[in-house]
Image 1 (spheres, helix red, strand yellow):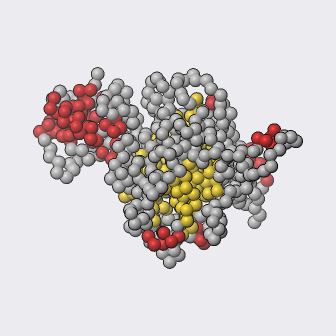
Image 2 (cartoon, one colour; image 1 turned 90 degrees about the horizontal axis):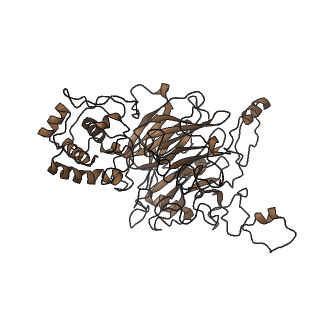
Image 3 (cartoon, rainbow, N blue to C red; image 1 turned 90 degrees about the vertical axis):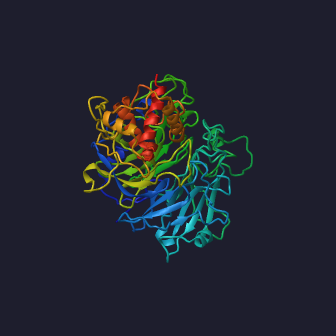
Length: 612
């Protein structure tokens, strides 16, 4: 069998008929040249794929990533924010002992900084020759280094392939890179080996908002970039990594004699005395997740947006690097900062292949009712189930799953599912399927990496391949029915799929006369009761205000007090009760059946007092 070299990223394909190759290359995706060519929700993918999310395992505390070692074992490795890596076996069982536990290697405590929800253990990547050398790499916020990102290599003991002892962890640790972090957010985190064998690193702009350090456009900073390094160095050498010679600025800062004449402008333009040679691409805000297409080697980057747009970038396998993705001059294909829908500004850098809006797509815009989100999380590239090179992303706030793909003429972005999950990341398994993890974590009132309800690992399968009896993610249905508040006892329904809702008591809950009245009539007896309103406000401030604000106008998910409702039933007392009791999408899922029904009625009384 003969092979050929496709690009700078070396990967192998069997050499088949030339006509097949020409056909494939003629339909290769192209980068958008204008804003109108950027894909947005409402598109249609070729083949009209339909998906479902099947639960594989749960019990993971704030899971942040999932990866495969591609070593023939079929194991999946789930990273937990606190600093642990858990193994999920091929049969879906979860190993009780962590594969890696960074909470026990430092005599002063955890080596991982988890002081904010965007800090912790970000991701894990396995060396292409992991089966032979046992090397794997993790990226995490270091507590001893005040939250700086560290990328560390460890080595598995062949005699204990499923777990590293604290001694083994310390003995084999090799710090490959430290990324100084000025702020506690936008730290990026994804690391993954490309088809060329080099390690790619997603580095956020360093934090705050708006990129105050101008990191995205600053080539002297590794922040706001996709980095590319060669980790195959001699351990006896003091050099932790090498610069791939094909990096776009690999030699740009080399010392040289100054020469004023006889050199072309093109040659002068190659001199960048302060550029970081690790940079592969720049102009990113927070590329927390990216994925290579296992079939083509193309790179897809999910770059978390700021206030109005989320963007998805495409980099073809034949790229030589050096792309500028525009931040902070652009947010997706739009001007930054945005002041309105008709802002005019020069286009900076490469446009995204796809983007989707926040609920308010520009200042002063009427809130959208569908197709929006707040934080794009890359899941992986699907080449199955009528999907050919479709990049799947999940939104952290809305639970939506979008698929982005090339239809032969242009990019398409289609909403494939609207789930009840708060996505954090994903990855391709050894079986080629895309897997996703979700958390129930709180952004503005982080309770710590071990205090939130555990998240789960999900497999994205064609809807026709859901195994009998499998647990699947709830999905939002088109619901027009509004729960009755008169004419007899209401039927309580789940706000996502409209299925009957079982009202179960949690431990120590007492069904009060007010709850019985509500369950019988659908009317809240506490409405207008001053004492109940004050009690409801106290509970609301404890559980809800961190996202929805004190006056219940915060827009994370469905709003609570205005006339726009994601679910029609929220226009009634019964509907509000259903949402709080069962949870809707994202973080609200963690409240399901955790607040006593009597307290929910008091929260509702408080919300009713706020309505205009």
